[in-house]
Figure 1 (cartoon, rainbow, N blue to C red):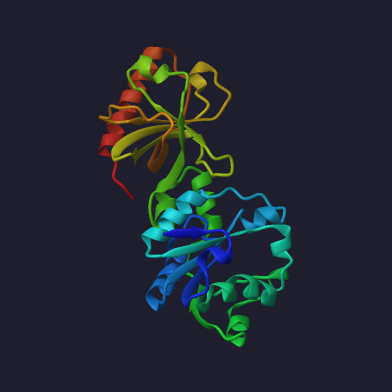
Figure 2: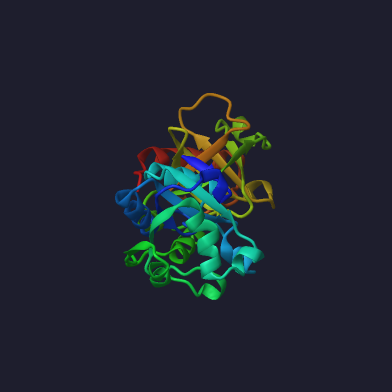
Length: 287
């Protein structure tokens, strides 16, 4: 998928455009994207980064990084993406100005969006306005029970099993594998220590069963209370894996929350519980 950050990088040609922020690319977003892909020609996404609500002064914990969002959109059949660098100046554009600058400039013929989609200064533009401006539109109905806000609530509470159906896939955390204190190796469970993007939503502290890199993974999210830690860490023990992951970007699926993190009476008790977590991970099912 070709990714552009200005209309000129794509050029003007007939397009069916799915438009939205698409944070998390949940099942509602997927319906919008499929509508554009099925409508043709040249299915394209117009999306925004950073998140518009963040630019407008609201705190937003993202369900996916921009890179992951674009990967998911490409997997749905999108051929090109225009990532609009959202700024206070873009927020001030009228719907007509935004349309000329971004939709007309790339040759958009059809726009697919959710029924609640709004754009332009004061959220004053909608699909009805786009029809008046000469675009064909595809209105995608809201999927009951699916919203980024509700998914964020579930993820924040650690209910990764409950968040998977509206998300349309398992909850994920991703980051670059960096050097940790290597304590897991001394215990017999070497872990990949993830440095996650600061804007990414990370589930509630606890121990999770999941997968990464084609292997099941027992994942610890928290501060390592047994060792008196204070800094949040995301550590994944990949079952039956041998190799070096340092410096690689790793996407970790979280299938189930197994238990809370806690301090133990001894290191031996800690190792015993980690072994139980590993066995629970082997038995876990992907949501």
